[in-house]
Image 1 (cartoon, helix red, strand yellow):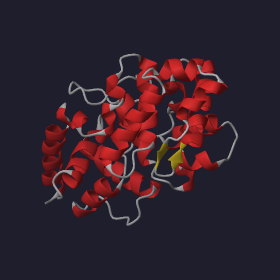
Image 2: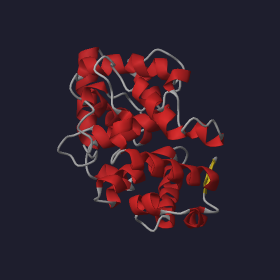
Image 3: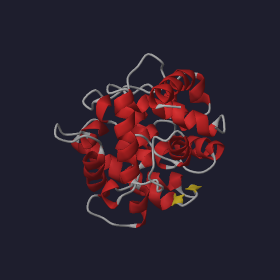
Image 4: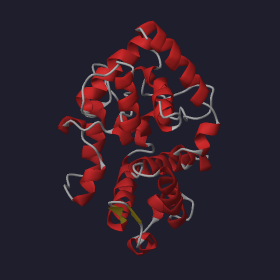
Length: 253
């Protein structure tokens, strides 16, 4: 297929998968359980953070996270004392354990004491073309100057990580359309500057369609595929995440 045909093909697939049924099979279902902005932000960040491995396991463990926070993540984060964190003991999802979970809660508490929304920490400046620097600013604020075992769970594009989970989280929070999958909760970050959540599925399909030539799934690859998707749809380039992921995960394209 030439680029025109590829764009038409991906437009069709994006429309197919950007539908309410997508929620049932995706970790985005976790923040969809909530209505309060801060609940959605926290549930989304935690679900995105553990979004690697088997999807059923991700969803099961993300639901366990919510249960341990009494299904009121913002209330738990904002009001929890040291003794309350015992509720998180024993949690594990692959290499993310109860120590990491407790660190997330304590640092989220600190961030919300400064601002009423996590959007503030992800703002993209006018002279920036993608979320790379914004993710780094969030990472710095979140870690609070500490480099501990939990640091590995907050990806760093500056170190050439593709930051798939944080880019996915940004898609959830920022993208606005009428399909009801993504939340469009944050309106100070333009959709035009979002980056593709690059993973095995989106990377492999992008290469099969000759949209991506770099072999590694790293930040350089993110910028390469971003450039092509922005040509396809400058206003909403990351709508193609639905197409590329769906083709790989559901169709075995």
